[in-house]
Length: 198
Image 1 (cartoon, rainbow, N blue to C red):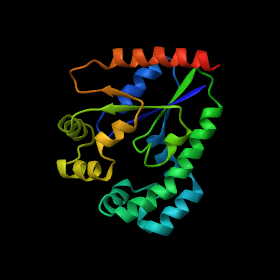
Image 2: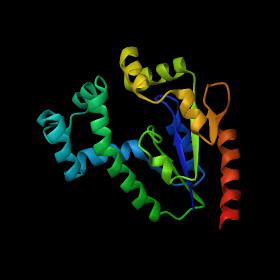
Image 3: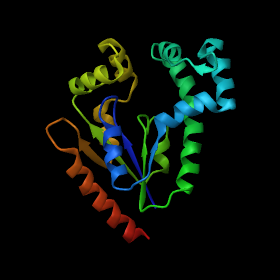
Image 4: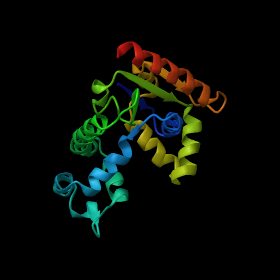
């Protein structure tokens, strides 16, 4: 079974691309959602978060995302600390998930695929690319973030051009080119790759 990664900067549309693969019957592991679950429910991770970021990180038992974001997106060191706690647990969860799948290939979707080292477990990585202004507009509509908040996050992510150069394939999501034909072409390629591999 092939393991395919999907990555891209904030607002690039990687989740939309992953959903198209899902409609083709391909299992998708959403690392960002799983990471949020782990922070909320994994006792060991919770204790480490409290130890490093203080009691305020949980409010009435719920992860205080707003507080955590305000701390880590303004301080490189704190962001590294957070990633050092959450990434290993998320990668372990992905390993467990893959073992349970039965498909020609699986998709692992993550914003920080290269940064977390998760790409080392993958056969192929797809990058999803979109112009910065389109990405900003999408995130403003989706998350109600200000332009400044979005740019804080963009600046903390790997440079988009560098990221795309590390990918094996790039899907362009610039609202001019259709996503579905790009996904279908890759789907056919992965199916034939898997059949030659098995």
